[in-house]
Length: 399
Image 1 (cartoon, rainbow, N blue to C red):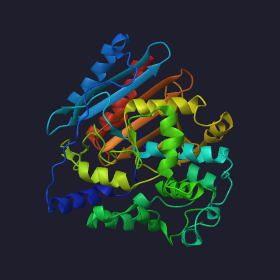
Image 2 (image 1 turned 45 degrees about the vertical axis):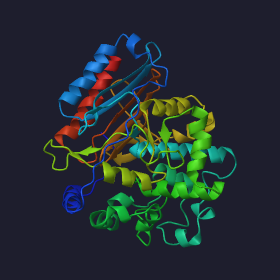
Image 3 (image 1 turned 180 degrees about the vertical axis):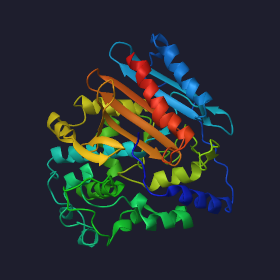
Image 4 (image 1 turned 90 degrees about the vertical axis):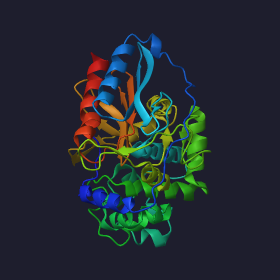
């Protein structure tokens, strides 16, 4: 199960597509990358290679447009495979190095950047956010003068998720392309707090949009530059794109996005709007990368290459979420139980994409998968990826 938007979005999206259908139709075909592998790839030598590839092909045949999967195990090394199409319309195949959307995996990047700045002594977890944000912002936010950095990281601020608010929904319905980054946090201005800071849990992308703004103010420049210098470049993540990288928001090799609007298995191309919404989001979303680069990130995080052991311990102080969508949440990290042991990392759902990035501490196995199918609404084809595929991947890897 994935973190879902829990409002009545079926009607909303249906209305959105009526509006979009009246607009001038535009072709969206990605600039496809060359079919080369620019990372260590031992897939052909992996004894499970045929089994893994067959699994991908099976789910594409069932209706998922495209999937890319990375599996790392200490015994067999790295395996990366893909199946289906990055663009159905021109039959561009999904490739091992296709650029896929992070969705809410972007929150873990934001959390890492925040913890790095804390280690540098530029802020503290228990600092109130009004130390770093203007009074004109904090005075208008619910709990705005009592929320801490830690509250934002752990979704315990009491601020609602802007994605579920009627104002954001109305703007998406009327003119989604008019929404800008500066508008995002304003959706929660002058709203009532859900609870006092630290006294409840509510998954909130708004909090991570605020964290990005705080990093801007602490570093004195756009937070994307800090991501580049403190995360992407040290990792050698050459196929990660976020604001500051050439080619963003339509980098070479980016997949098209598809959505089962009516829940009937008939998918539609929603690349333009998925790409635009992704491009305006900051700390809560917005990253595009290859699955190998997501692997580099989670591997470095769990092995102390991005933050100190002390910081990682802070990030993995788990809190019950009182929600069926997530077992426990730390600071920018989720922990979920499986029959093969706990997994830690993050996942994400978007209108035209989904991604899962998890580390299994008991076995040192890492699994990263992504699809160009939108998964934030329940449907049979969405269940194929979110439930059936995710479960069967674990069965194949661990048996």
